[in-house]
Length: 302
Image 1 (cartoon, one colour):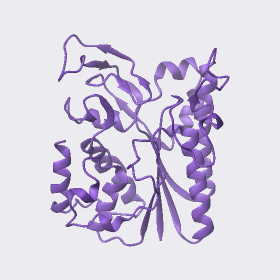
Image 2 (cartoon, helix red, strand yellow):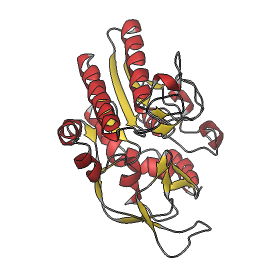
Image 3 (cartoon, helix red, strand yellow):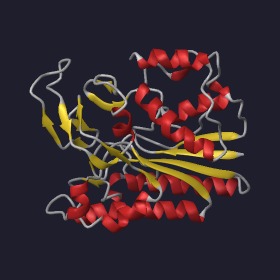
Image 4 (tube, one colour):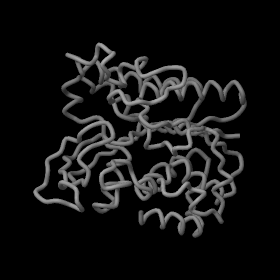
């Protein structure tokens, strides 16, 4: 049996609040209700469609992503799940698809198993932590780089094949210089998918965890306050990759919601993640059955 862990924040969370994911629901005669319409279709659901379409039976998906998880929380959840799987299925293969989140968040009200946000001072800047005022951001950035590198080492030591990527750009070249991240980032670039993106206009002026480094364009768009000019950089993620392949107004779940829509997930899955899954012998790169495409086309219109 192959076990595939999907870890991350709301960019990877299907809202079901359980890691007991059943691929059998994603059959060729599935309906919109099987996808919990009108939520977006996430990466693990797209994989489930491919598994059913290609009649792959020896794969179990584990969804441990939850909204507002910071990167240290994500790291702990991966370690916990890997340890659990190795104890229960010592002879099985384990893969982990790790969507990295914001480098720092405010104190959102979230639930963390056996912990709370105050246990993660480098993920959440709250009134209860000394990091709130006069904080040296070079420490924060370096803590996050160390955490990512350490998680990769953990995966390697436990023979877990891993795919790392950011949901959206959290690192910028100016920060790399200012906070002396060059050497650590070179290490991360060896195993983490990072997309070098071009100058582009964006219809949403903020990410889930804060503002973008943007300049407002002098006209409005679909009731929004304007378009935002995003300067090119080297360290993009899912959003940056799909944004360059999508038109304005067709990238996000809602015009005021920075979460990706189904088409954005589909682009990244089809172009990037599916090739990795193929290289690992989990699925082939064959296209999905037309019945799946018909369902997804309805989502693409949302």
